[in-house]
Length: 465
Ligand code: NAD
Image (cartoon, rainbow, N blue to C red; front, top):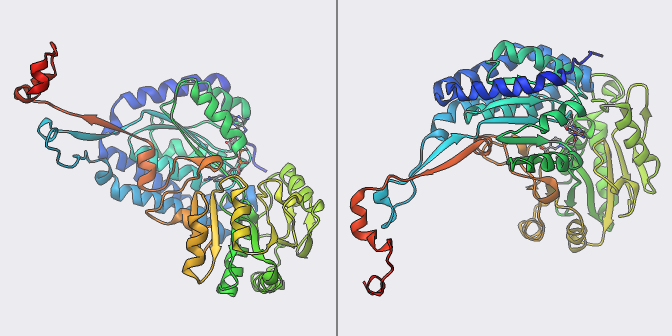
């Protein structure tokens, strides 16, 4: 396992000050320069895709295809999108015509917020760092990036590559764990974007409040799936199971649990079994390396295994674990009750509980009795069914007949609501997150012939005029 070198605590103030100087140099006011840095960021990922893939395999046991699809291609996609659109996004905007104000030449300038802090989690340690950095650069900010200490190979690689490709007075990596992040959070930033657990999200928001720093919180939670018997069952089972096995379930938008009508549970379980057999024939057994990711840490392994050991539901398939390799097999558990261990917290692992309900009304009530999730999934061929679920619930995203891939969909904001977070990113939404909309007017003197009534003394004749 690679050794992650933590940034000395006493260097953090200096890094912060250097980035402030870099920001104030005004280099990133030039869109051309932003594009140059974005291009460099793109080359960083492209030139080193093999090393990135190896680092992800070392940290997470991640199969190469998953690394390519979910981290490398998506990062390059985000950078290209920002590179191609930054001129358009950064252009000042004029508001719609207004009889009173258009003569004052109103304009909205898109200005950088300044020096921003991006704190990222372990589970997609490339995409969830490179994507936000691309957004922050495209908006003209300088950036400190704090990757996760739980992915030492990937975080070391980022610390090695970023200074080689990007200006060190504009983008820097601080590596470390709680002391280093606490030190970072004691400083004044112009925006903080944090992706991770709600528990730490509260620590970040509290620290930011000291300086009234705006914060984007990309958090997690239990994302439910509602099954309508009137669905394409084979496709539903494949997409749900894939959403749960990719990265061994360590995905913020992974389907956390299933709500299915009691009378349809067994049919749905049979379809999941078939999907499982087709994903993992003997030759591609998930316990063999390179077919399936591993759990990030021994502590996370113990936590997830504990949830499984304590379930009162029936294990349909899976259940195998190996502590030495942090392997937990894709596992489906049926007849799970609301007070089961598997329903007690975000699973963030490859366990899929199925909770039988009477009907869609009970499913909606079940969801509404809990925190608003980051994603809500419905599998149905019936427009009324989908509409009923979406109209009567709240969630970061409302997705029909698909799982997990919507954060990559160009043009859609990615973010939570309530306990699953606030603010959004990807594409233009990342640019907007790191941008201050600066209102401007330039009012000509002759306007006072019309608006001169505003000046005291406030005589009655002015009212009557
Ligand atoms: P985490 O909260 O443990 O860690 C995230 C970051 O916070 C890391 O960089 C870590 O060093 C830092 N951190 C940890 N403890 C801290 C403390 N006490 N003070 C200051 N900083 C601290 O999260 P994780 O385990 O890496 O990620 C899993 C969680 O992230 C899940 O809940 C998942 O749903 C969520 N997540 C959300 C999204 C999203 O886009 N909404 C994406 C990925 C993951």
